[in-house]
Image 1 (tube, one colour):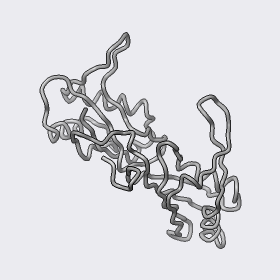
Image 2 (cartoon, rainbow, N blue to C red; image 1 turned 30 degrees about the vertical axis):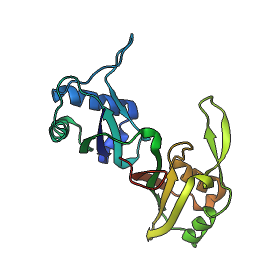
Image 3 (cartoon, rainbow, N blue to C red; image 1 turned 60 degrees about the horizontal axis):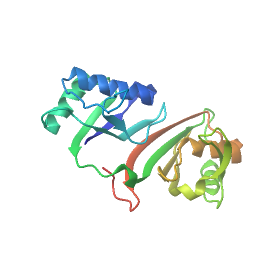
Image 4 (cartoon, rainbow, N blue to C red; image 1 turned 180 degrees about the horizontal axis):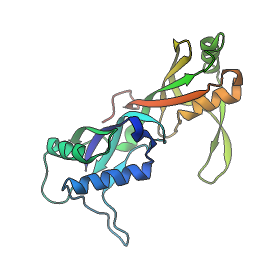
Length: 220
């Protein structure tokens, strides 16, 4: 399999994971790049995206694995052809071979932007630093079976910086676990709502910045 590093920006953040898969499948087809297909009764194109991104989240570092049928096509040509047919906001940064095994993907950097229409509450940065410095911060998580359990997210936050960007904005810059266990950046906002409601923002957005293995090396 070959691997694509791509970004998802602008209006493209509203494309769901399944629709994003279709966008890439169609781009490959229109570019004349024939994908292999899985075996069985319902063959599917051989494309897969690591760590599906939540709708509304920007990313600089999405990974897609694919397998082309027929003769090898130079990676630079694959990149150029795909970018000719992808939708605005989806941009292939790099195409390469021999990517690291997805099971070794462990951490990611994220920035969560908290916006307050009436201005950042008094002592807001100190309060949020105190919250995420606790030994236990419980947030509800829904399991695949549909059960709702409390999860201590502190154990999945490897580092956290809280800083005020302007009069109305606070940034949470964190390195968090993204596999076994997994922390969704939305749970940082959930922790604020549950444990410090006076710091609940009027608007929140997040961005995925970079991926790492367990040792902190950039994952590709």
